[in-house]
Length: 309
Image (cartoon, rainbow, N blue to C red):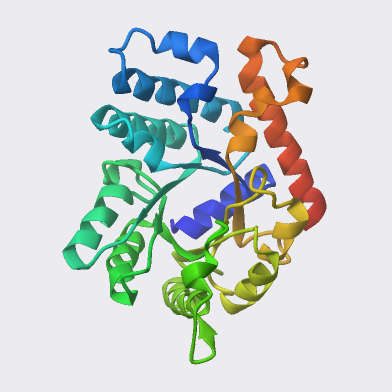
């Protein structure tokens, strides 16, 4: 099955397009997680194990609620070899829990190097098809269209997908993305390339295996980019801690409630630190706080987008 058909089935099953971002930070981990990792050698091995334990428990708490998770590779890579092993274990755990996995690694290179990245990360339907085992991968297009093509070929072969950075959610995105040439901004040009590739790879699906990252922190651009890329699935960061709301992301969806997933990281996985939840859940009930916050996000999205609960 294609990535988009599997994603659509997961969105229909859970009746939400919420995606839980796995961005672990050691200083914010619950005490019981840090204690559970204390048997590992101090330093990065211990931090990596704590990240793995934490993310697996987050996955267990949301697996029945959402269609997908998005681990951020950087937090694991900072821990060195132990961190990369932890990332692979977290991805495998999510796949075994029935979740689709979008690995946020923002890879991008030329020729055989790009293909090596793609073959290493993109497993598609069969999780064992790649060492990292992800369903989808974020990709940086800055080196040009030809750098995307190896990722697209592997994604097609394996029933995987890529999400190309088009309009990112960070405040300084416009430094390059807003530069205008021939009456078109850089991000609009990238969007055009993404739509061409998405349309060419969709077959009988409504969307192709080439999607776009479009930040919810730019709601006006989101409206125009959804129209410019009708066949590209969207990955929408910026919800929650970065300030975007359910109303901001509503234009990302088609009338049937498909076409996008909305990522929320810190506001969900560290929800147990919220003032209004500290008294509601005991310290060792932090996974319940995460599930509670995820439910709140799901309800907000359903209200704003009309997705059936």
